[in-house]
Image (cartoon, rainbow, N blue to C red; front, side):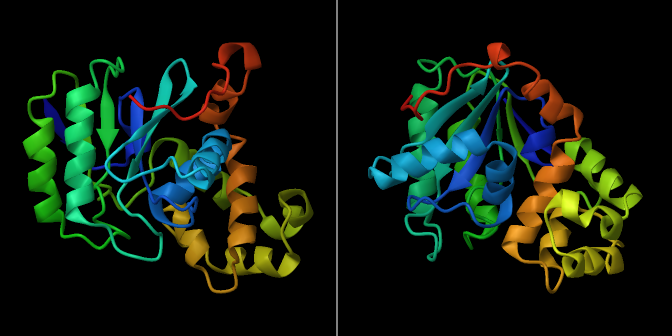
Length: 239
């Protein structure tokens, strides 16, 4: 059964979250970048899979991050520089629908596959997603990411940066004073990712800012409270 949500996959009540990826080991923008920054262990395994040519379109991979959080890396592109293709979306969805039971997936949240940085038309993607997901016998959430305001962990992070004075703590954050000043001048933002769009904020600076404020959230503390609570990091697996 499909349920549409206005927010992001990170706030969906699903155990498995879908991340859209390419097959060349790059998570440099959009939802993939956020997955990379939140769950770096997953990214490291994904890089290895790409280096070994084991990440292929049409075959999603599962990473068991913790007992209650799995990540499904769903290739919507081959090379990160080039657009997504509808055939790859369809192949991956077909593979998922045929194998989710064997992989014991209990619930899952999808973003708009290939319809953001991938360049595909959402209405076409939506039809394909509904074709393959409508008969799936677990809760399926399709997350539209259409909310203007942050929520959940992102809200915590945004509140944290808005209440802080980066100029006073820039050394602790790991950024330059100039970068801190740029952020302070542009705090009229509704979503945390908008910081990455501020002129003068490099990818490295954004990473440092993101990681600093993410580590103050309830989600991070829950996920990292004890290594004993986490599964051992296994290589990204097929279904």
